[in-house]
Amino acid sequence: MSATGCGVFSGKGEIDDAAKTLEQGNADLAIRKAKAWLNMNPRNIWAKRLLKKIEKQLVEEGRLAMEAEQYDAAVAKADLALKVNSNNPEALAIQADAKKYLRLQAAKKNLAADNPVAALRFIKEALKIDPDFQEAKDLLAEANQQVEEKIANLMGSAQELYDKGEFEKLRKLAQDILTIAPQNREVAGWLRKAQAAILERNKVINLELAKKFYDEGIYESAKKNAEKVLKVEPGNRDAKEIVENSNAEITKPKLKLVAFTKIKGMEIATIKMVKTGERFMVKEGDEFAEVFKVSAVDYDLKAAVVMYKKTGSQQTLTIGGQ
Image (cartoon, rainbow, N blue to C red; front, side, top):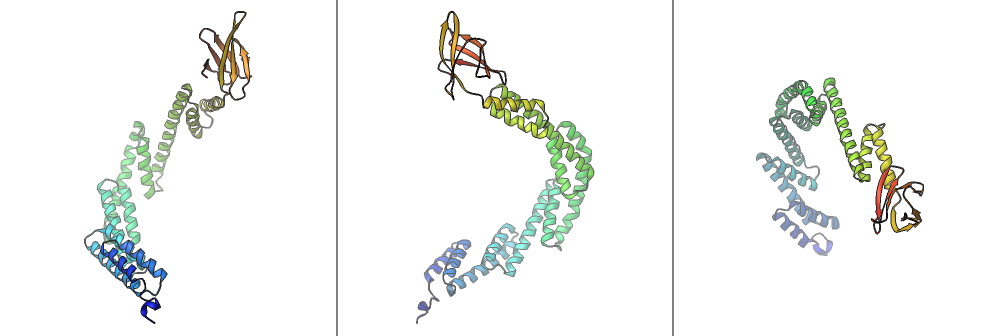
């Protein structure tokens, strides 16, 4: 029996295609092609050889990227090598080294940007990868010092930020500091004050919006903003009233003016309930359907003004309109 018949060399053309893909710089696709054929034929030596070649090439490219301090590229090469062999010790070492140096770079960038809290977080991540990482240890002292200065500055400027109404800025700074100094009671106190002020301000804004939308007849938006107020202050009477009245307006029966007539000098309008089709012949001052009252009837203008008793809102009905 020939080698091809045994299946050892079957798929050579497909493996050549995978090798060509590798030469074109697409190692990931080459890996997937080789693995796909190996899954179909676990004895295929060409697929095995190609995967070994890819693994070795990626490790070498990762090492060169590390020497060039191209840490993102080094991580990418190591990750691909580990897709071929998840236990490759060289790839694992390159991956870990590149990641710790990326975190060191991020720490330095944040220190330069006067953000020591973020810098400290990256330093700790780097030291978690390599507890003996001396460059990270050296930077740790500088970051800690800057954090202490940041805390001192906060204590000095917190009242000013609060008085200026810069509550979000105060909250963000306090939150950042508490991530690395969670026991600092003074900072925690300022965080609570900032959050309370933000909620109060938002409550005022949402209540104003709720009133504005209600006055404009945009009841869904009025209700939504009033409900936001009630989340902060459940007992707020104005917000409760807006929610209640908005619900009433949203579910209010729709009316249509369908006819006008005069009987013995009295101007009478015929109003139809759109949903039920029920009709009411009414004059000024009449009540109908238990929830409506006619405020005015004008035969010449062919218009009627109707008040909704549940909320006190009024609507003008005209022939052909609503």
